[in-house]
Amino acid sequence: LPIRLTCGVMILQHIFNLSDERVVEAWVENPYWQAFCGYDFLQWEFPAHPTSLTRWRNRLGAQGVEKLLQLSISVALRTKTVTPTELSKVISDTTVMPKAVTHPVDAKLIRRSIERIVRAAKAAGIHLRRTFKRVATWALKDYLRLMHGKKMRKAQKPLKKLRRYLGKLLKELDPHLETCPQPLLRDMAIGAKLLLQNREDKNKIYSCHEPQVSCIAKGKAHKPYEFGSKANIIITEEKGIVLSMTTHLGNPYDGHLLAESKRNAEINGRTAIKRILVDRGFKGHEVEDAEVLISYTKGLSKHLKRALRRRQAIEPWIGHMKQDGKLGRCYLKGVVGDQIHATLVAIAHNFRTILRKLRLFYVKIFGWIRNVVLVGSGKIRLLGQAA
Image (cartoon, rainbow, N blue to C red; front, side, top):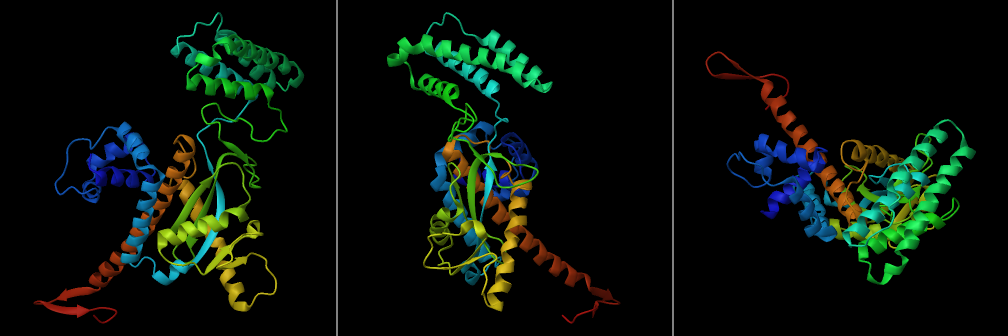
């Protein structure tokens, strides 16, 4: 497939918040999308199978998608959506990019771990005397029924059964550790950690298919805890063009992420950043070659206080990325999938901003043309402003 086609389809997918299947179907119906992907004539067939997008994302990788982000910034400069001087004044903030995982419950995780271990053992040709899949399903139903009725103590009995089933399954696989393939060893390690982890432990397992998912609390009343990865965003103050979006494992301190994101933004925008507006979560940052203004800082001049009010502008832009884009949930696998997904969200946000700029430009042109009225025999009368 042409690389312009695959990159264009992925950009369109994130601009209009579509799935892999739906973006391929809509591509056939829209000639403007086909022109965006480099076709001069209308195409009547699907450009590619939806699964090809998955392979192309893996082929491009995080570095290839980062080049697309740099391209979107250069397009914003050429269309005068943003000026080169605006790239030196930015806003930075962090948010949580939730992963496509269900709410973690110990009983569900243990039962899911049993299923994955049994499936991997069968694929490796290992015979199990007992799989525990059927009794584990019964125990999970009992646990959920008792928890729904607020019977916490009685629910501990089926939970202990599930732990015992998983322990017996791991014990039966111990003699095969030396010959086990890598997928089975990974599932067994996740199952063993599920048996040992407690409520107060750190770096817990919250998902069997995404073990790197972290539990992050951002102080939201409607959503106290979110399960995913932390994303650090840097955008321009005035127009909101994204210069950098990086994802990080765990729940690192915001101030420790600012220096790395600043370097990445300077590489993408090819402009040195002079001023960064941040909130109080970035105290203790390591940036020394730029002016960092932190919210609620006392003793600032009137000019800096006025500039610092602009920091809140990043909040609605993040909300648009989560609602209009795909930042609200990441379906790509692994740590690399998180970075690819976050960068594609940033690219789509930049192109939506550019399209909005072009729409306003053409609205002004059509508004001027509408004020021109033909009178009589070819004479032109100007209404409103002069030509």
